[in-house]
Length: 177
Image (cartoon, rainbow, N blue to C red):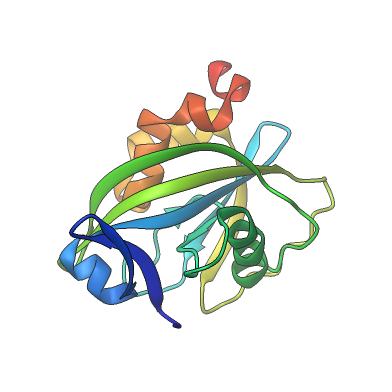
């Protein structure tokens, strides 16, 4: 069931092809991960080959769980697939729902399990070039400033997370910025 993701049709959760989910704006399951280190957030610039929001900056990584995959297992899997990160076991922070136009007549309507992971200073990051162009560590306060100044450089979901869910995601760290 590759490229099939859990989505709701007529109130029932069913596997639906990923592109169709976004074309129809169907409500669907997702996972987002934020890797943190000493007040900094690891962000990624999406590869130009991505079918939506190419070249935009996003949170550490995000994806859709496979049909029978737990959100926690999905988070660990995706850290490895996108960034080559192993040995981190993200903890669940919250579940949020959002709807956003992502361009090209595509809509994300996600029910997102959000995870955070605290990284050691020597974290090895090996981005998959099919997924990620670049990564960088950025102070949470500075990230919020950058998003406010140049929102077009960031994915809609990162903008939503920072504007509406920052305290849920970052806890005490958000209260300091």
